[in-house]
Amino acid sequence: MTNKFLLSGNEAVAEASLDAGVSLGTGYPGTPSTEILEHFAEIGGKAQWSPNEKVALEVGVGAAYGKARAIVTMKHVGLNVAADPFFTAAYTGVDGGLVIVSADDPGMSSSQNEQDNRHLAEAAEIPMLEPSDSQEAYDFTVKGFELSEKWKIPVLLRMTTRICHSKTIVEKKIRPSKGYSNLKFVKDLRGKVMIPSNARPAHLRLREKIAELAEFNEESFFNKVEKGLIDTGIITSGISYQYAKEAEPDAGILKLGMTYPLPFDKIRSFAGKYKRCIVIEEGDPYLFKSIMAAGIEVEGKHDIFRLGELNLKRVRKILAGENTSEEIPPCGKAPQLCPGCPHKTVYEALKKLGCTVPGDIGCYSLGTLPPYEAMDTLLCMGAGITVGLGLRHILPEEKAMKVVSVIGDSTFIHSGITGLVDMVYNRPPTGHVVIILDNNTTAMTGLQEHPGSGRDIMHNPSHQVKIEDISRAIGIENVDVVDMLKNPEEIEKIITKRLSEKKTSVIIARRPCVLSVKLKAKI
Ligand SMILES: Cc1ncc(C[n+]2csc(CCOP(=O)(O)OP(=O)(O)O)c2C)c(N)n1
Ligand code: SF4
Image (cartoon, rainbow, N blue to C red; front, top):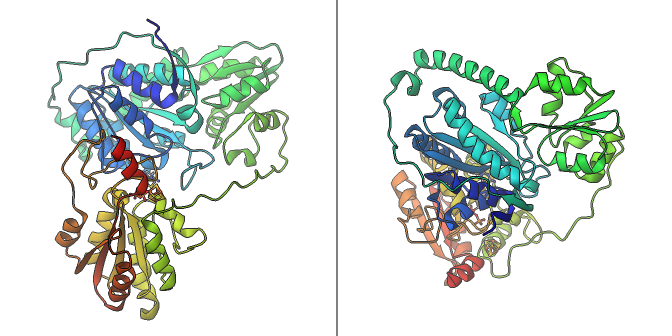
């Protein structure tokens, strides 16, 4: 039997997690990370979608406190949501192995920003691994657990879109683990309870671990030197390595796989061997700035190459020292809501009623495009409700009473509930109207289940969290549920009525996503 497989980076992380004996995988969907947990569940791993990334990480930390190996997956902006436990878990450390995957989206193929999460690893002082193909995604996941267990610290596996989604050959080099049996929680008040008197020494311990890890990284498995034939050396990491190698095959290369803490002696010695040493990296000049700050002279890239993904052409330009403005790629056809999409009728009504619509992230974000042009703001998940509240608080009454927030069901569970709490607690004088577009799935990221859908990651029945029950329990004055299949015309009448009242109102526009209905029919 072969032990070589053609896998995407995401599949490789999932396979590595299973082979490494991971007891629990948690996460929240988000491109380009989603398939990791889906694949882990499909091949028999214990996996679960969490309501949001903060919950996912905290559950993963709990498992790792109990000496288990846990993997937690999310897209880059998800790590913002999980930042609170992320930073302090570095202080408490873990007793088992914890690998946190941040899948970054340079170029924003499906995201609201292109933040480079390498900065977050450095800021939180959490060791970071950056694979440059699926083989490394597999190997680094396995080694990430070993690293995490040895230093009792969470490890960040930082991937990017091309690594997550491209398929390359993976050789499985370890025997699949049967999992762990001695799972237990060991009481350690000073190590696990981060009150200030415990957190101060914990920070000191973290600094010591990072110093040890920096020393370890000087000779670690993660970094590779390739000798060159010319007087140019390239320092690179992740997908940029593939472009650099093709753009200048004769250059010497230092491929960094562990990019926090950096092996500065290794970098210094490499840079010293070449007349010209240039850093090729996608996104922010994270490596460049860190290397320069360590007093090692290297060349960087022009600022225009900080935006968007790199590719072979762009890397050739960086190597040539060019900073010419770039051709704008032709616009493809704008995405559109599917025929029969339940969100359409709501936007038709909002447009007709001339509403101001703070919106949110999901398929329904397409309501901002023609022909509707009915969604006016998109900031981050959950902000549809809260930005609406801000507007309701400050606009003159007549304008405030035209503000309607829209949010999807998965997004509502993720981070809309606290906004609703604010709506009743800091009630605007005009009240507020929120429409929850409940299509019973997380459509935008590929039809994942969530606590409101009533099914688990494998689409099996689970407890269903009812949005109307939450809204009523919080104290919302009017809670309407509109069946968008049977009575679509109702929606305009209800919005009109609720806009005329100075009350807190939630309107649940309910109809399953047409694609999810097809998917469920197949299951
Ligand atoms: C913090 C964060 N996590 C994950 C995502 C990816 N994402 C965008 S919208 C969305 C949920 C969409 O589901 P829903 O709100 O139900 O709307 P639908 O697409 O079904 O219309 C997800 C998971 C994100 N943009 N930000
Ligand atoms: S996938 Fe579903 S929610 Fe998204 S546009 Fe299509 S029908 Fe609408």
